[in-house]
Image (cartoon, rainbow, N blue to C red; front, side):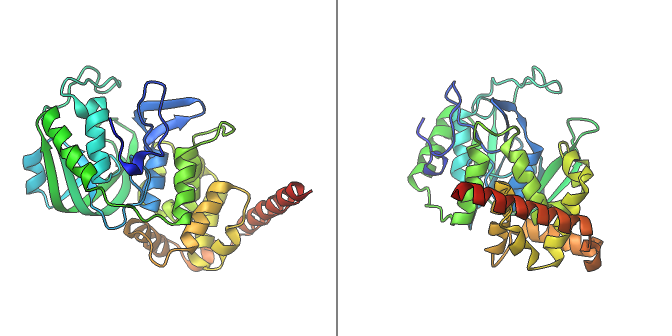
Length: 319
């Protein structure tokens, strides 16, 4: 199956499946049955597609659903998955077993043996209105990120594989070129091409960097699965507050040793306008905290330590 140009950088697993941006990718292991909440947080922060991890720009944001009538009636819709580009969603309709086949069965503990409905609908929205954490409707007691979509513009209803293939061919023929800047490119590389040396999912590392950029103020994020590390680590919030309230701090923070944090701060410093979701989170942070709440000696000490590590690493490299 030909891949969209924007998906050619994705790694392929031994069976031939593309490793999309939103699935868990631990050391030596890719879990196609799990959506990583940490990765969803990073994608929402930097406004990236859940399949290819490239930016949306002016393109519509697409979601997969199975109830067209309800979709048309609703002025807005809520989804538990991050949105995708149109061509990426249609590509998934060809290669993802669950989306492509009405005979596909889910194997998780909550839906074991269930088949998906025969009709698949891809819905294209003009914008992601809000992203927040709340309890999953499927996993009792588990918080997940939810994406509230607004302004439905276009949809594809796919009744069978032939219709899905035709829609995909048309999307391939008209696939627009993506304008991606160097700062975005670094983030994409970190998300999609983790190195063998990494001891954890690179999506989790990018989620920590996203925390500093403003994801710390996402409503309900403290209750979302996989966020304990950032919630319990006091320096994460303090550094996020420094970035929020002190414009020059993110420039100083941009030369730390950690590649993900460095990428996030360089991205933040290069934006003349932030994605609407991230700006909404940062407004929430300004509402909840006062500027003097960022005055914390521990966070300043953490930054000095990080910068010393960077300078030491640079000296070792130059010897």
